[in-house]
Image (cartoon, rainbow, N blue to C red; front, side, top):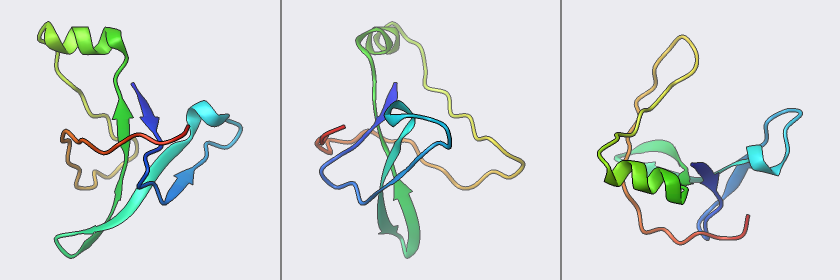
Length: 81
């Protein structure tokens, strides 16, 4: 799976030394009175098959702390990128 730009994207984070495949597009928003960054990820056909076969999604947070996170499904339309 890879992060994708959407029509609602308001910014992008670049990996130092990376290329456009490493770009993390996000939408800056408010949720329940808190500032959030929303990212949209697109599954490959193989990943979609694996989910249909019963595999689950795992979230890995890098670093020492663990910020609040949420995973959900979205119908946000993908944009260029």
